[in-house]
Length: 302
Image (cartoon, rainbow, N blue to C red; front, side, top):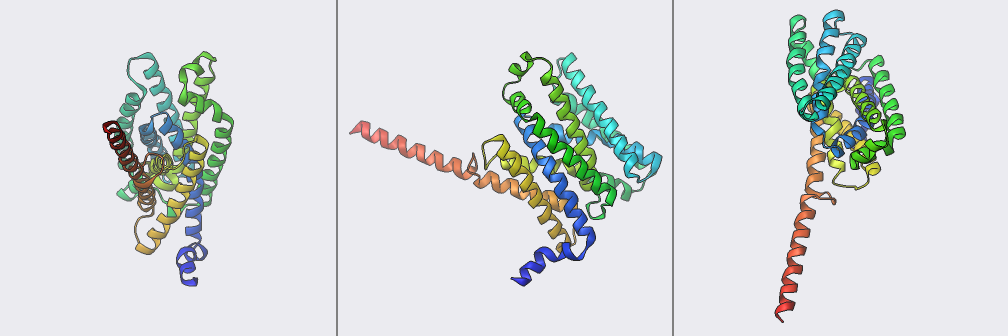
């Protein structure tokens, strides 16, 4: 028992950078998971990926002007994220182009522009830090930023919960109730941008969307209600962060990909054995239907 305790807990007791990494990853997971649930419900799963790359040019501009300054890169990413969200929304409303296609176009342009800007001044190491994060090197300021954004997000989601659920289930009804639907949509996009900007400090612009979407899609296979999915997504994200950091410590591999792979493992296990539409349940239901059909055919024949 003591040996297992040492394996599971000792790294976080012994090393301060491991404790900061765990705290930052948990703060991000607690807010990103519930946001991912609403992206899944609204069938906008790829929007998170698009927005994660949309902040890259702003982060790159902040890097070009102030180096690896958390404040400059955060402000730059926030500005470009908001601009892309507004422009993509306007284009989808004023043209026949769907919102997901509009975000996809901005995603491709932003990724190319951001990588180009970072490469103008920085080294390959700087580019890796921006794209894949520095979860094992979180500063106190970055940890406070992620914690603050997570707290704001959870409070805002609690306040907008009914409106967001209504928008997912019956957007036409919400439009008849005035502008509350549009304000809720813009508020949700603002929360999404905030979490992506804060999260790139932890997992980088390429990886942050993973901790948002993988736990959310996994939770879908275990529980039905939206509230339960939000709670479970946060828990799964926290567990994936813990497991990924342990794997990173003992196997000496990069922490951000290890966290995302742990979340991916939870996703695939959920797809396989989840009681709400998992493959195992689907096979069982198919066999049960076939047995009932054969039985009814036998009864009819008799």
